[in-house]
Image 1 (cartoon, rainbow, N blue to C red):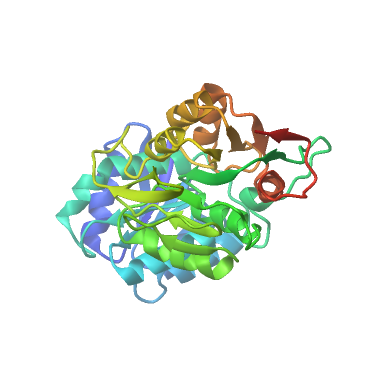
Image 2: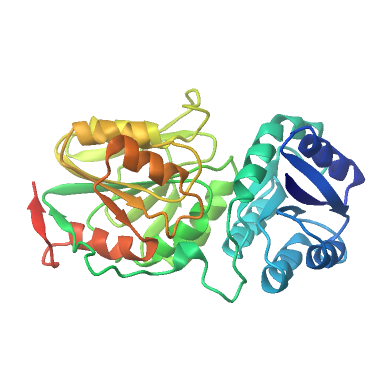
Length: 358
């Protein structure tokens, strides 16, 4: 039985979330707290598998409570945030500070619209309960750099190149690690699918842009893709790529979700599989589910591609990388801290490489 501590300053929201949890036979809302101070006290003295934590609260807000919890009594924490710019920025900071995931309140602090995210709450609690959380002063699993003795040096890709990255749970922190280690002169555009609702991906792009030598932005429809630039799919919309002459152009689409996801990595990967004249690198990082695995199969069948998955050792959730490795037979499974070096060696001329790929 998954025991959950529900934290929110609204009695209505505490009851609503608790009712959702108690309706699932595998979990229970074991206790509630009305502010961060109360939550910290109960987290220290109680026995909980997951904490849902409202961002905006009196006395001690969600961010302060999260940092204190991660320092003194680490638990898997799911942030509950409003769909505002401030809420999005706070959520991105929370994910960097140790929160496993977040759930967005569709409109405002108190809303019956939360019924629409009931399944999301339950699914994320179930996933979070399986995550091993370390204290804040310990390096989290997704940022530990393991250097295997037989680590490949890279497979140099000839000609024009693209990089496409897919991730979900644990993705913001993993993207920060990977993108901050890539060189400014990376000779390829980078396209990123991060499962997030609208309003959050722009804040994510802004935060990643501050931490990377690459230019990171939220993708817009009809952009000519430039090397050294990272394009984050807008939340709630698909990102695809098509060829126009000698260039690649982004397509931001409002078509139906694919296997429950919009944006979907399968849509991006499938579009790249149809682009000839380029060598493609497909990367699947931490995340739950199997999004991206079908698209990687298409990329592999189209040839001229390199497929990389994050290892189980460093993934917060090994769902998406595992599915990609099993279904698409991705060639390389690398620890997160090793992916940037391998990618640079595969894209930059003059690097130490095992073999050519053309």
